[in-house]
Image (cartoon, rainbow over all chains, first blue to last red):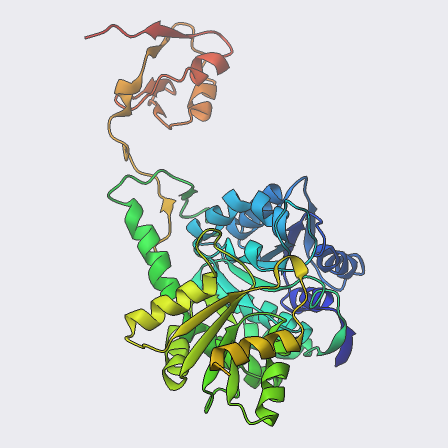
Length: 372
Length: 85
């Protein structure tokens, strides 16, 4: 069924179709309407879930972790300061191996206050042991949210699905909402969670690990996330087979095959970059866009393959590692160095705090990259 | 197989925690009414029940928190300072 949905409403539909059992969240712009819509579904009896109202984001994350310990499928969503406020519990979620899903409607971090998009909040998850997917349209928010539950339950790790404040969160687009039977078929019977309370075989969460035991838990998360690219690709393929929706892989490639300059970019602005690349192609310039859809697992193989073919790589970041540079650029450079690819990499950071990224801006970057 | 960071019940995973103790719970069995509240409240599970239904403290692992003495309704448990050496 085709609906006219904002990115936030699309997330709520994804949650409903995934038959989530517990939702806990604290309102923050621009995330609020995700939970408002879910609340409406619960109120109307369309989603049989427990909606837990809490006094802070720290509690919201704690509540969904607790729900996962009871074996329930659980969801929360937040933005910027809210994500930072739940940060201790973010690490607790990954360390506890709970298969929860969190929507992150990306918003610049204060001060100075901003409600507009950049990816600094989302990027704080990078080292925490979460799988991190990023959507660039309302359709993708819906699809990724459903896929995220499958991914979380297969990896036994929390999954974050990010999308840009307002550009994606509050812009309504036609969205293909899959029928419940298709999503039920895709998700299958929910298996008994290995972290859920078991009265026959009791165990405790949150125990002390001595130095001889501690490393194996971190190494296991590291290994799991490193190998998760294939897991996600398989999940996405199965989802697309079940629903007939489009499949992109970890990186969506547009005009990359014969491109001299390729731009790696994530999120809504990829659409403007693709538009710019199309304009330049009409002028005979060979440029392409590689839209990164997953930060963890990092698409190592895809990045290597794309960069090897190009003569110049541009990495566009909508966040900083302050005092160092673009986060994506650092990761791309690291992969290329490890794989022995010597294509030059240009790092560009922009669009912070919602500053506008029109196609002309990307055209200029491409021209600079090509040395034209 | 996932490395789950969970702890299953076992005896003395953290070593002989009895030597952490500063005060030792001492049960006066003449006062004990066998209600077993001490057994139920002990956070470390170091109180067991004897054949006669009396609570028995395992001093190898009792950390001396004093919860049993606090909960005892007939004041049959006294916290006695450990002697050094």
